[in-house]
Image (cartoon, rainbow, N blue to C red; front, top):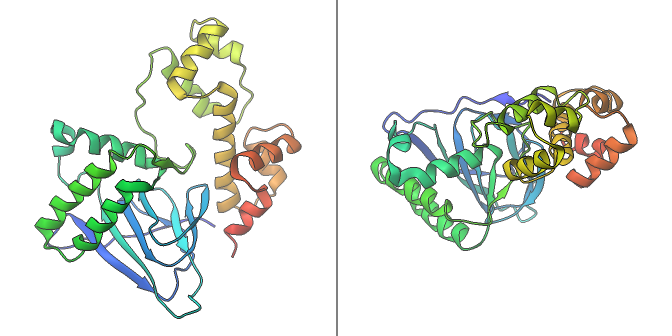
Amino acid sequence: MQPLLEKVPKPHDASLRAFVRQEKQFPFEWHYHPEFELTLITAGRGRRFVGDHIADFREGDLVLLGPLLPHTWRSGPSPSGRKRRAIVVQFLENFIGTAINECKELSRIQQLLARARHGLHFRGRHRTVAAGQLEKMVRMRPTQKLAEILNVLDGLSLAKGAQSLASEAYAIPRQRSTSPRIAPILKTIHQEFQRPLRQNDLARSAGLSRASFNRNFRQATGTTLIDYVNDLRIGHACRMLAESSKPITEICFESGFTNLSNFNRCFLRRRGMPPSRFRSQFRR
């Protein structure tokens, strides 16, 4: 299904929205919005969907989402009748004006928000501290909330083990900091990943030997060309599986794979489930 654009209510006296969401169950509502969103689950268990990432959640789950990233939390009703509960904070990238780009003190927060375009899941001590801050924050006055969200984000920016969730296919484009030779190669890959890409051709266009290309590419992306391209292709396939009714075979070839068996193996290895099961998660 296509994600729905949610119009987030704007508080008349604040630049961010912080509230408690409490329901008998969290329904599957596949949606997106221009705001960043920080969500802490305080009661309830179920499945969390962020772009093409699907995982279980439980009490204490803390996720920071970037703008325009489709997402939802889904849970059935509690057997005990206890309500599901979450604390949610939503804010635009310019919620403090131009300060985030101009104040060196906010550079860590700026970097955190850039990483959050894929969605970030937090664990450990920083998650625990942030959870306590968020519980207090929802009862604060607007000016206090503004100061406190900066404290929360600053603390989370120090979390080393935050897990990136959605693939490149779901994150909105951003400027990449990489070498002048590899930057145009990445642009070509993102534009043409559905077509055959040959490493020798890409290396030649960058004026690099095969060995130099491999070394520079890994330094820029942290992975190999084959894995990088396959991640893009699988991410694209996930979007089509979730948002269209096209047959899986057609999605396989439209995503750039030339062999259905290879597509299924690659998908299973990266998503932990076959394409048909992934699609079924969005049909319940």
